[in-house]
Image (cartoon, rainbow, N blue to C red; front, side, top):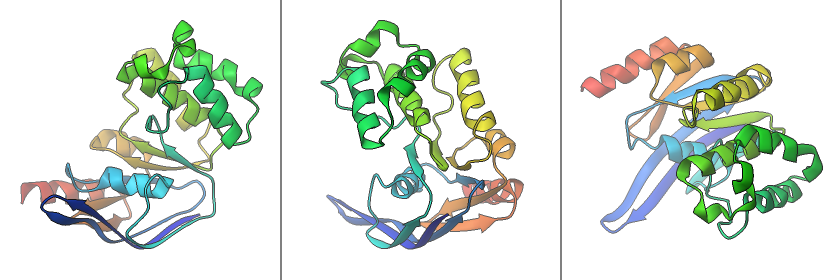
Length: 218
């Protein structure tokens, strides 16, 4: 399970401290499919980075009793001077996954061809995202975090991503941040709305989307 209790996050801007999250609670168990919606700048990406351990909260407690991915297609951990393959090797060592077991999958899934042997710093944003998506899926996680990146790549890549994530890993927990109501209705069982630094939970995606729409009209 994943449990967030009274999570607060403050950034220090030139104009002074900005409290993005103001006491957020969240619970996710094995197999849960949870959507999080909110207006631009509400702190959705901050929240998903905290869940994934990329950032630390200013206050509050995060408990993880399952293996949690970083946000899919997150590219911040890549070493730009290393090739795509060298980055794959490095991540395999961190997660104790034999490189030989995953390289064929990464090559086939990312469709980067000869660019896998080139430094990541020369990649386009789309190429980096495809490599990051492949790397995310080569590790066996109990919970996958998605921050509005499923639309990366062409139709073939999107179809393959859907198969790998929602069909082959249908028993895994998923936490999705998205503005797409149709996408969330299709993939989530319940949802929450992040508004004014607080997370309001709903038993259905429709109820969350309706509440979010009301907030946007205010």
